[in-house]
Length: 106
Length: 256
Image (cartoon, rainbow over all chains, first blue to last red; front, side):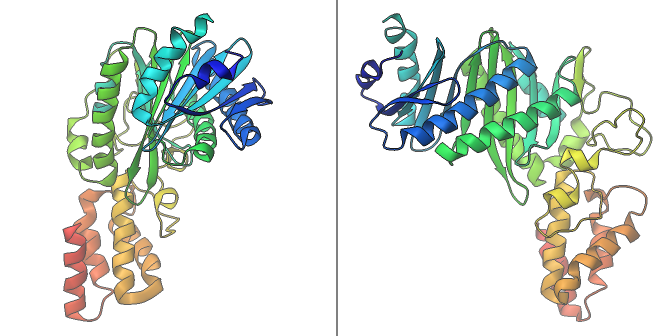
């Protein structure tokens, strides 16, 4: 998932940001402020990783959050963090499925 | 609230359920033995930091789900009148049926909202059941005489109820800044806030002081609870000179 061009093919994905595990910005798609998104996502993944360790749940694979207007899917894989913003939020399961099946194989 | 959390724990794959407020203070928890109060408090503190960062991206978030190798962590937000944002967190293993869990948490947050707002708290008190064997819960240790099942367990060596760290302290949940009064549950806290606001219409800014003094008079030895709300209303009404205003204060509080 190191290439945002694959993500761009999913119609419900409005914007996307690629970062490393420490919140370092690598790439962005239709996201004007990728660096600040990267920093926030870096902090979030690190905090949720901590929560998982405390609970003995193992390594973090991904996070999703959803509200009235949009949803966000964060996928952690191979030291990279792909964050995509999805509209409408009801499309989140479909985008998750797309990540889990076709995109991860590429 | 134990009953509500137990209904989530009954969903296959769920290991623990907890509720914390916007400040990361644990309100209640229930779960398998390893998910004790200390762990749940630590988790609440960690999760509130995560939530703060989510809100930088999406202020109106409703649910957050984190997927791990060996399980899932699901958060659902709900708003409570007076005390504000609360979060229900569910810890589950990989056998969790996500659809069932979503329904269970939606139902639970609706009930928790009512319980924390005061609507159902009195009835909840009567339906508390002992936790099943192997589970950890607020009311798991035997309760001392006169204590409330809503109060969290005390720390070893400390006989005082943990009001300060439980989010049940009036000072932490009240918007009117009454700081030296212990309350039995969030519903009682909400009632005191309403009483102070209602009284302020008639006596001005001294209302907070009158409410604090009134609580000390009607409940000198135990945390204030809704069971003695009528006594407190009578006491506070005595601070209002005009008979008509006194009645209007009584009616406003009785309406809820």
